Image (cartoon, rainbow over the protein chains, first blue to last red):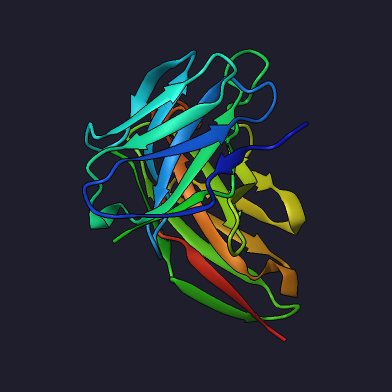
Length: 115
Length: 115
């Protein structure tokens, strides 16, 4: 089975720009979550998507948005980038439901630098 | 609201010695508790999880953790440290098992193994 893959691995943007990060879920998983990990900190929950709809959100502003596609891949979009958005963005997929434990499987992340 | 406190941002032990990483949590409902490990430039990997089935939880790579409700703790231990255990360790709590409420992570503990 394939694991969670994220792209790009590294990118640099300037303040005010927009960025799209992509994630391919592990095969068979139906749920995807996104986390932001600032340098030296633990990951913070941004939101979760299940069946193409957002079904949970952390304390992040609306300029953080996402999509989940029918093949369970996902995008994280961040508008009007700020310097504090510089972080490692982690995608995690899971299988929720009778056949799943909900265990999160993480990708290696996309490191965003905002200048 | 739930929270996690990891005591000690850095822990150093000698190879072969006991590893003890401390985690205290707060939660308004019976929690799901997790330990994750992160190696440099990689995503997070689940070591073990507590879901109320047993208070002593065994995980991968010889790690285990004990849930103590009276102390609101979930400390991670390993009897004998190995050089390959050097990594960042994160404790996390969830009310829904990593579902729509996401995981709340601690700030992490960097484990250093001395030869």
